[in-house]
Image (cartoon, rainbow, N blue to C red; front, side, top):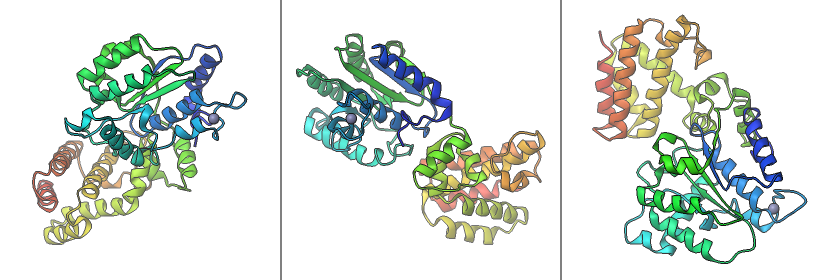
Length: 353
Ligand SMILES: [Zn+2]
């Protein structure tokens, strides 16, 4: 779904401004797309590249010309700077960088809303900026557009090299930067870009995008968990939210009855040794507990079909303590500080008292 041609309602104004700027010949040469993860910044960046580079004068983007196709082609890595995990020898070789970039694009382009595809330890290196410079030094008569994905992953050298380029951008050249945490991006880079802050999506907008991606009729709990992010909604589908809620409820009922052996047995069955479903389970468990507080203070529930029942038997103090215990367990699982099974058991026992 092309977000430039069919923008979600809450983005409409920003998108219209960009189109008007283009018509007036004032399209920003450096554009910084910011906003929560999973709302569609990558998709919009690709749609913008197609829009800017399309060779069809009558209908832009036409979706069929060579440039439009290249905007969504994982093999066409030349106009992308993406965070890579690559060793210091390889990052100096263009073919190695191209290969690593295409590998990332092979996962990212088919799933532009997915937020977990680029590891947090990956970086954009100065060599990648230099390869982009090499491309820019070639003569060109057409429009060139580059996407700098998760620009806050640039290391300092890369950011300084890019800054120079942004200060003296060649004509007909556009840079589209995306990032979800703007405070991590160098202030000097930010000051060179036109910022475009994209808001979280409404439940209706998420449903529309999910339907376009083949997920029809999603439930109220899934929309509540998504917090305005399509990526988050897709994670809920992938992880099977409904089953996870049942497990979280079962967990709370075992804990209330101090039925430790059946609880430990069930948790081993649910997760075996897998970390992702266990981390997701803990997230749902925390939301379930917090919904009890949300209900008593009249705030919208995130799991409306459960009606705040999960946390109903606990005081606000208990809920905040348990949520802390849950968050600690999540971090321990993510950092692999012990087996999933041991970490969950230790956490469950902290629910006593
Ligand atoms: Zn085209």
